Length: 116
Length: 115
Image (cartoon, rainbow over all chains, first blue to last red):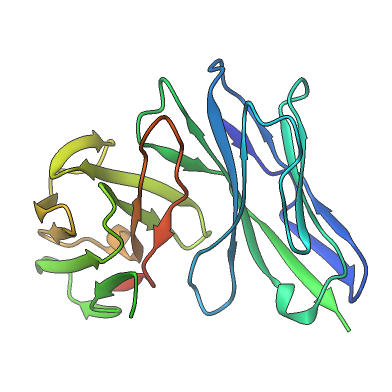
């Protein structure tokens, strides 16, 4: 069963606007971590933001914030004030604390296009 | 100073050949990984080592053999290469201690093309 689901294969956003990339996950663990990574066209994988399952506050890192809704098992990434350099693939990922060992699993990704 | 470095960045080879990819991290992390990214950009874990011990071995053909000589190095050897092995192979590392879950630090990837 798919544990990380990203339902948007591609998204367009106008420069300077905000965009939300969706991610839902499936786990029976109480302890887990959720991550977002960015992969620009150059190919490297860049860590953006982390949310722990016990964190009560939504994580924020600069223009990135993670909208964590535990009951809905969703961990959407919000990018505010989009820039042309935000055009990239974005991956949601999860590691389960107790049963997941050291395995981080990834969603299929969302390709974001920022329009000038 | 690159945190996670992989060599080579590009490999082009014929079917049936054997190739190796090397990875080194200077972050002092305990855990290292190999991920495979296919042409559709899907990332799948292959192997993980924690302090030189193999802890994750996904359903990967026996032709793939990882080796970790020490906790800073993780190599991947592939025998009898097939067309379907063409992909980008990422090395990554993480530090998981005290119950905290660490993010992955990725190398730049090694693009393998099998002709």
